[in-house]
Image (cartoon, rainbow, N blue to C red; front, top):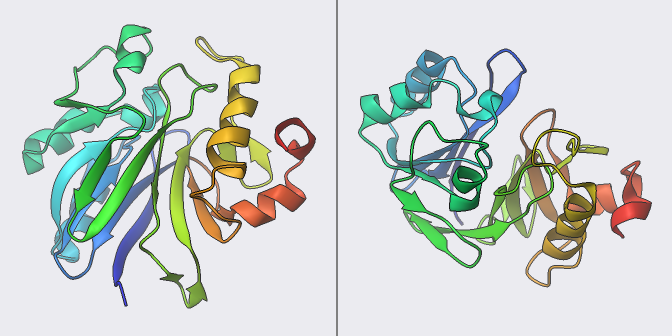
Length: 213
């Protein structure tokens, strides 16, 4: 059985979900999005004696990138995100140490995180999924996906901000999640705001389901 590290910290002025994700065996973790209050993230990582190996962005809006430099300097870890987000002007404060694209993967201990390009909320938005986790909080699952502000519990991300596109957003949800053969209804969704959910729940209960199914 795979023993996960998966911590959700709600940080910053807009209540952003910052995730610490990795393996409890190797203790390697990645930080997914920041959003502010880096001291809380640092304290949590040190309390569980984890070893951060990278900082991943789902997208570049300020509520997901605030104070990321402090974490990078403290842990001496690389920044990873999609170059389309940089080239679009959505996030230009720092270049990535590693640019991520569809089909890439990141090894976190014995866990593989796969990268999907999921634009719509922003041009270079990414989602990260892994098929290795088969249990979370006593619940049997097929895997997990971190979606940023693409899809939320019973809702979706905004597409009316600069760089947003509603057609692209619905296409990303449809093609990259709902009808992705790698991702089942029994995948847990960990979004950029609000509580976690599952692909199956959103297929049934999301108020925008008619637009992406």
